[in-house]
Image 1: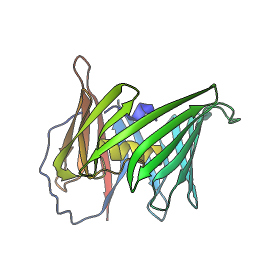
Image 2: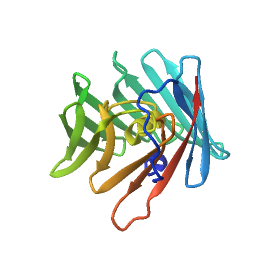
Image 3: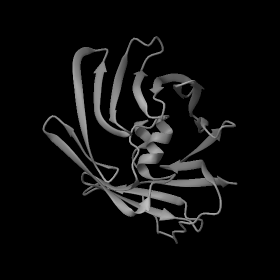
Length: 223
């Protein structure tokens, strides 16, 4: 899913926070590539695809399986276990079709706030530990060893569809960071949002010093 993480900016329109319609992302564009999204009757995504890439989502109880193909060839399978509130507690990513090459992330929470992530992999016995700090229901920093990444938020705007973090988790097929507001910066990277006349996020931009921003645009279907 890394290809989806980086995104760009457009002019902002009026924010209509009192939406009268219920909208969901039907398509998005990254680097000139258009991806279409399909949903099941429960409103959960079942596929994201373009002409060469496809990703399917299968649901069974508290388990979600996300399978990705590139040009019809296996790319990865992600097996997600969720808790009763819908947050992921374990995510196993298999990078070969036999499932022998894998990484695994286990998540621990205080309530619905992620406290710790433990990563292991098939190639060795090492363990990676990330710890998380929260303030006002927003995750404000993550620490890996002595390295700390700081996150900042727009306190005036509630998290919503198309927010950088919400979209990344939507595509990944699982939620592990349930924040109150939309993200506006991660470390040295800054996020800028555009809004349509319905108040939906129409675009998001991520930029950092010395790098060319990459963009993502959204299309919605509304009830």
